[in-house]
Image (cartoon, rainbow, N blue to C red; front, side, top):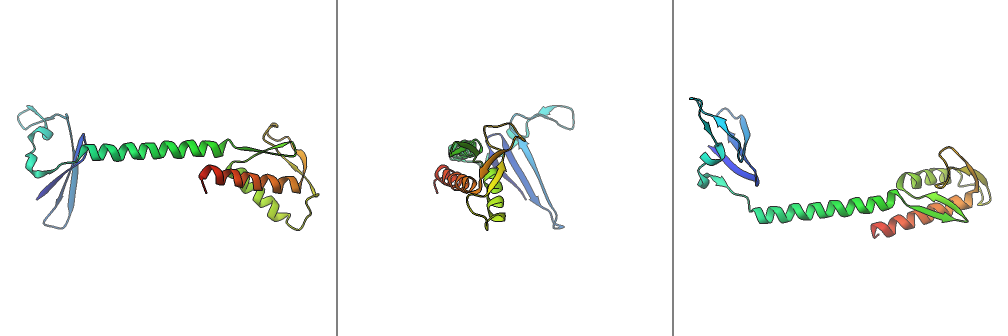
Length: 157
């Protein structure tokens, strides 16, 4: 027996379990025309017996699609805030995106035995790539803390 299920407003999925245990499926597209055995055109959608189709509740489906689109837009805007984040520490502008936070973490862990006055070089958000600026480990530690706090605020944690 072939089963017909509308999966969106424009498509019906067909499926059939065969006697040999195999399974076949396909899609019937609304408005698609095919040729019959004598060369005439027909629409498989229009030829279906409506009583055999499990019809989609289109308003419910559309509401779910709209909710998903709104969620994805929200996530994208939130991610954009994180990706462009910058924190200011003692006049230094540090990138505060997730990759930069990870780099700060690696560096502060590697230098955990050093004091805050330990001097290092860091590429800052407001300098060209590859240009290093003298900062202290304390500056970097504070930048990491502020960057994580900013990310938590954006994410609502």
